[in-house]
Amino acid sequence: MTDENSAFLDAVLHGRQHTDEEWESYLEAFHSRFPSANGLFTLMRTYAGFTTYELLANNVAESSPKMVLEVACGDGNLMDFLPDLLPQDARVVAVDVSEEELQVARRRFNSDSRILFLRARARALPFEDTTFDTVVSHQFLNFVPDVAAAIREMVRVLRPGGTLHVATNRGWLDRREHTWVYLYDAALEAATSLHPEMLRNQRMSDKRIYSEEGIREIFSEHPSLRLSTLETQVVYPNARMTPERVADIYNRLYLFGSLPDKEPIRDAVTRKARELCGDADELIVEIPFRLIRIRKGF
View: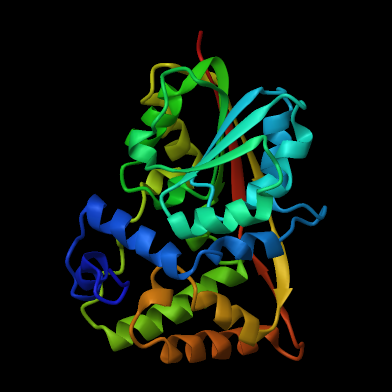
């Protein structure tokens, strides 16, 4: 199935709500076309010089886990940092729904016998209960319609006393000082002018994941998690980019990258980026993140 004729995209462009299964199928097809789409987050660094993958890996390594599961590993960016921070006898299992992304990850890390890449769906992880010391995921809960079900599976395979680590976009659509918001609005305006019936608020995730209050509410729904151990850290990864580079990235975003007529969107983003640059050749693109961790009770 191609992105252009997916049931999800058809529903969105015609103003109809889509099902969770349609979104999941679209997501799988999208990453088949763009197996390195998450490369944006390897470009962006905090003002201290760290990517969100590096920060997440450091947080995971603090407890020196021996068995780690990464859910929605993509093409393996977390593995650039995590294995070298773990004990020598530690093992990492990394799963994703996209076989194409997994193939990229295997090529990158095929010499490291401590890492095993497997194709699996997050809503049905193929592991026994209490298998892992730590479960970690980067930019995944942002894109899960039923986030409670995804967390339930991650908690199921986590041992008592183990830690769940999540990196998630901080909810930048309500923060007008961030450049990315204006670029997103320009892309969305161009898309809706081409597709007037387009559903603007797609069910791509549980919106509660974008606020401190919502995060607390989500994790409170899982009685085996100790809410008193919930910690969040806000970070601000950013990168300097030319208007043309920004537009290229927008043509690889989940929705805009699959629309049948991309050039008007590329042009709209390029114009807005040039406007934001002013007299400069580049602009700073910043996307705030939250790093979240919480422990499972004994």
